[in-house]
Length: 516
Ligand code: FAD
Ligand code: DLZ
Ligand code: SF4
Picture 1 (cartoon, rainbow, N blue to C red):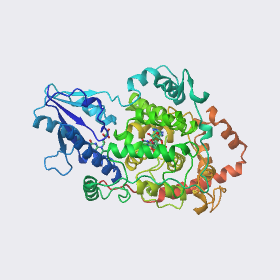
Picture 2: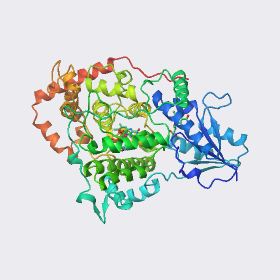
Picture 3: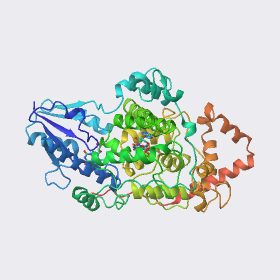
Picture 4: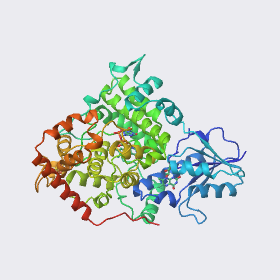
């Protein structure tokens, strides 16, 4: 046969299934298309990262002697749609089938399956770069009333042998989360991230993106993403040496000035395929085995990649398309316009959104406990929030973004991702961060002009959703506190929250420009 291999922008691994056992005449296609750039208004850094990484990967394939067709965004004959472009190229090169690995989003998977015809079949292959497949996840989850990360994670530790000593977890415990909750250290100096040289390819892509996607939210100036495997390996080395040892302790801390803290910054390289999760976990485990990093850090990291990352993917593929329609708390509010401008007096939100705009990055606790928590407490509609997270982060791909946003943040999946919502008041943000001293609000007040809005929103959220949440055993303590609160105070909270939400609703609606 004479296949056309369609490689998507997040399939840039030489080990990927579609590049194995290639017949002599196989044509490998990588396609920059407008449709993928605009179905949500992606951050310009995200588009630049993907295009530059695709161009570099195409070059590597050519160096390995492969026949590659690269459709650039500005090519005259580009039909600007992934499936259409693949079919055009298949006919151009006289190919008799199109091969592709399962993409990262259900909409494309569905479209590819629907597309196959007798004259031009689409052959779809499993993505085996992950530790698990949708099929193995399904086999595990089926029959469980409530699938839980912890059980899945232990099974994955056993299956892979990562951090295992025989049948026992290294260090005698599966979980070191309790050691991983230190607030921001007062005098810490965080390691500066590596800066990768921008070659001519990256410069050309940055110019292209600046001219085509200039109306999307996000700045290009600080573009620093690794765009090749070589650069991604440098990022990994940097993480192992300078960040991993402190990764666990400050995993939950938030800083007003530092976007990266001790986080790995590896999600984008992992999601694009420049690094494989197995090699990253093995390298991190080696640091523990050879005495260079403590177990709480190493276990904390491996839990995220071997546990959460695989778990969300399993949920995504086994629950879609229904998963995307979940709205267990009936949230209907539109996304506040300041998510696209950063213009709010709430310092923590402002900084999380500014860092997002500047770097196409915010770390997990900013996503979960600042922007996410706020959206949860305000009943922002899942679809609006999911579109935002999918657009603004360099690592965003629906298989990982959706369960985190709709499930973990909004509790809209009825508790598949988390047994309780991660709602919190200003007290939590004050404890974990140094934002509040620069804020015009006071995290210790709940009522009045100076009061931190998170506080009244938090209690009002609990009141509003008591029907759904108060029976949850993990919410018992907090509903106990609520019921002991004087009625007067509860009424005052409700009024305070209502007036905040009214103001929010009165702001002009805004949605970011989708450029052509
Ligand atoms: P680190 O803190 O260094 O973590 C190490 C690695 O663990 C990450 O690189 C990532 O691969 C993995 N990881 C950590 N947490 C999660 C998680 N909850 N789910 C899956 N993998 C995880 N991650 C994405 O890769 N893409 C997304 O689109 C995405 N959207 C998110 C949306 C929301 C609302 C939330 C709360 C989280 C989202 N995450 C997403 C998970 C997590 O926030 C990012 O993976 C992480 O912040 C990336 O930065 P890092 O590489 O420095 O992570
Ligand atoms: C996110 C993205 C963008 C902006 N552009 C392209 C593109 O032009 N060509 C491409 O193959 N992939 C792109 N991607 C990534 C795809 O959207 C991603 O592969 C799917 O979302 C699912 O995996
Ligand atoms: Fe955020 Fe409230 Fe602290 Fe201001 S006072 S930074 S709004 S938590």
